[in-house]
Every structure is written in structure tokens, then in C-alpha cells.
Image (cartoon, rainbow, N blue to C red; front, side, top):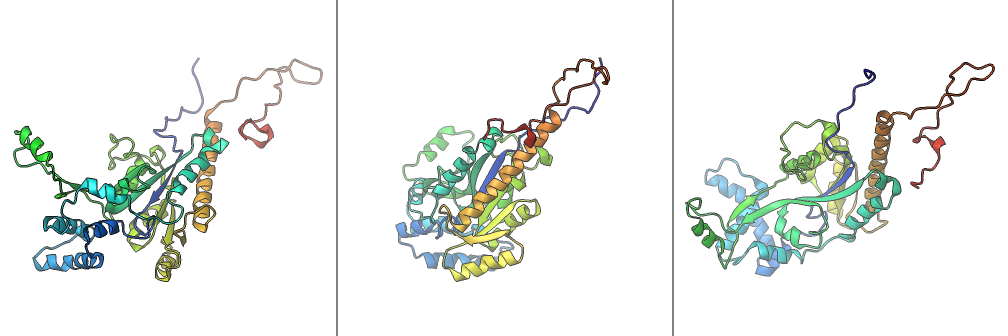
Length: 361
């Protein structure tokens, strides 16, 4: 017999039950720039270093350089310091070691575990496999983040990386030459391997959105319908500290995401900066960079997670109602004053309040 009715819906690529909390790093998770322990280790004047970085753009232009990427100038200047002996032996292993000295705002890293477990403990959220993932997208140094107390607490990190031993000319045909070069007993950073600036941060956002970070076979530039993306923008929370994050704020605000700006407690200048972002509609909310349980910022994050989770639950319930057919029903026996074959009343829908508790809390 030929079947009739609606065509079977296509199977979605992802169930879209992930809530992604995405963090900036400097002045968001940490009250200082992450490079501070690096300057202390080499006894380098931090203020002088950043003053030089600020002046590099004009110095390059005097040499005839037409365009300069401001966000990566400091990376080249670190390499220059290493090459000139002011940071001798600057390498990736040392960066990870110094990452352990990075200081964090109150409540970090505890909030990572607390938000995950909050969702996992909820019977209804667990039933629909809802979970929280944490990501860091930073223009800072990936090795320092990995070596810090948050390095093993997050699900992914986008940040800048160095190369210590760039392959020499001819390495494709002289493998031994490359191996000898790579096994240098005194490694030092020499080139940039991966660079992310405040604009290209948005690419990382799309990698999370489309699932490229979990499934590398998915090209971030490939067209993927909204319903097939791993983490919809409306399931994302972005937390950062200032105007440099406007590209990220804009993408999420335009696509139903959740944005929050933080400032160091007691810092009036930083407060005014994020207050201006709120007044301009750049962010949805703002609060102090205090992530301890019960703080205003913690309450905003946790209630927003619950709001997203409830929306996911409702969407999954609706999908079940739409795609799961009703079971066959018994026909009532004929009786006086009734039509033959009259059906019994349908049992209550398992998703309506009349059905009562189904053992899921």
C-alpha cells in the first residue's frame, strides 16, 4: 500500500544541544595582560615594551610599508627582543611554564566546572543531552593559556602561536637536514605560525558555529543551513571587556546570541567604557569581572544558560511531537445509541501537562 502524508524530514547534521560560552582573555579572565609574567622573567620594562609596540606602526610607515596589522605588532616585537638577546631562549616550553603564573579574577576557573555540572545535574537537560562547552578566543599567546590554570578547563583555544624551528630551504629533499635543524637543543621562537586579531576572531566564532573545530572535514567557508550548524549563534554567550571586541559582539547580537561586557571591580575608567558599550547597544548586559557563585556576573551567566537550555528543551519536544506518530488505538465495541466503530478518546499527549510526571523530575 502506498504511504501518504507529509514527506519525511531530512535528518539534521547536529542535534544543536550544545551551549557555548566563549571568553576573551586579557582583562576578562585575567586582570592583567598575560605577557606580564614574561616581562618579569626577563626583567624587561613592560611599559616601555608596549610604548614601542604603539610606535611601530608609524616606524614601519616611514619605511614605506603601506598597511600594518596593529594587533600582531607585539608578536613580531617579541621575536625581535629574542633575536637581540633581550629575551634569550624565549621558546614555547618557557611560555607554557610562565603561563602558570598568570593571575585570574575571582571565580576563575571554578565557574567552568560549575556551569557544566549545573546542566548535567538537571534531569530534563540531561534527557535531551544538553551540555555546556567553554572556549577562549584571544589575541594573546596560546602556549601561555595552555600552561595556565584554565588551560585544561576549556574545550578549545584560539590564540597566537610561534614556530621555533622553521624548515630550512631544501627540507623536502633533505629530510635529515630538517630533523637536525628541528632538534636544536636551544630552541627559540623565530616565526609566527598562527595569528588571530580582533577581526579574525570572528572566523573562530564561525568554526564553533559550524562545527569545524570538532569536525575538521567541515570547511568553515562552506555553506551550511542554519538548522545543520553544530552550535547556533543563539546558543552562544560571549564575555569580553572592551571596544576591541565589537566585531564579535556585533556578530552575536545580529544573530540572536548573548553578549556581556565585564570590567575590573572598582575600576571607574573601565566601568565607563563598558557602560558606553551597553548604552550604544553593543552588548546585552554588563557587570564586574567577579565570577564567584552568586555574584551579579555569575547570576547573569547561569540564568542565561538556563534560558538557552529551556529553549532547547522546548524545541526538542516540539520536534518529537511533530515527528513521532500516535500509536494505534483500539476500537470501542458497539453499544446502544452509539455509532459502530467509534474510537475511544485518545490518551493524553506525553508532552502535555495532563500527562503528569514521567519520572524525569
